Image (cartoon, rainbow, N blue to C red):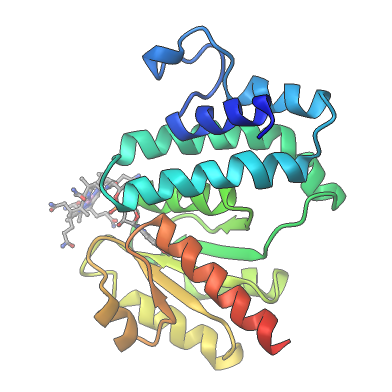
Amino acid sequence: MNELLQKLFTCVEFGKINAASPYPPQMRGQDGAMELTRQALDAGLSPSEIMDTALIPAMTCVGQKFTDGKIFVPQMLLSAKAMNAALTHIKPYFSSGEVKRKGTFIIGTVFGDLHDIGKNLVCMMVEGAGWEVVDLGVDASPEKFLAALEEHPGAYVGLSALLTTTMTNMKTIIDKVHETHPEVKFIVGGAPVSAEFAAEIGADGYAADPQEDIKLLEQFLNATNQTA
Ligand code: B1M
């Protein structure tokens, strides 16, 4: 791999956001994801190559380490921040169409629920994996999801809930959306949610963590491409 891309991979893997960030201590004073992405673009590397060779594989590695219990939320948060710093330089190429997104993921914390730390982590990781993320925030009503689906046809939907009292609102949203958009696929997640509960309420998948969201989204996409 190109040396700049190798360094960029390491920065995202270990959460080195920019030259000024003190974490991780062994990389103090070195350029971070922000500077290295700029340098890679200035050196003539294409945004797609930077995404596909360094940024996405680094986030995949981080997601896997989190799933395996080798790193924890603070480390994953720093990696997601490093990824976001890199993306500030790449995003203009998304709008110009030079870099293609895999698809769109609409996500929100269900109505009645104000917890958003886990949901925000999912947003950052899924965006880092090459998806456009439409974040509806917290306390999101069925109408909000319907409006977002009108604006983003073909999008997949993610629902987050942290309370046993609000996880049942997932079913209300799924049922309401399916009345007019029966084809929409839902992934549900959050601390009190389980695979059994997901199946019970008619969701298409359960994700215990952001990496599982990414895996499910890839599966949905592959299934759609095969039938197209
Ligand atoms: Co609240 N709260 N809280 N709270 N809070 C919990 C959830 C609770 C377990 C604490 C406890 O009693 N031990 C408890 C719920 C009990 C239950 O229902 N069984 C609880 C309660 C009761 C409440 C209030 C009702 C308290 C009150 O007012 N009496 C109230 C409710 C407000 C409301 O929502 N209407 C309330 C309020 C709050 C704060 C506002 C103070 C704050 C939220 C701030 C914020 O989010 N901006 C808060 C917090 C911080 C917590 C705890 C301490 C931490 C939650 C968190 O951010 N975890 C929590 C106790 C705990 O979890 N230890 C608690 C870190 C985060 C990274 O993990 O969100 O689980 P998590 O996300 C994970 C996975 O779940 C998953 O990926 C993430 C990374 O692995 N995931 C998804 C999440 N969404 C996903 C979606 C996916 C896939 C994966 O696909 C779509």
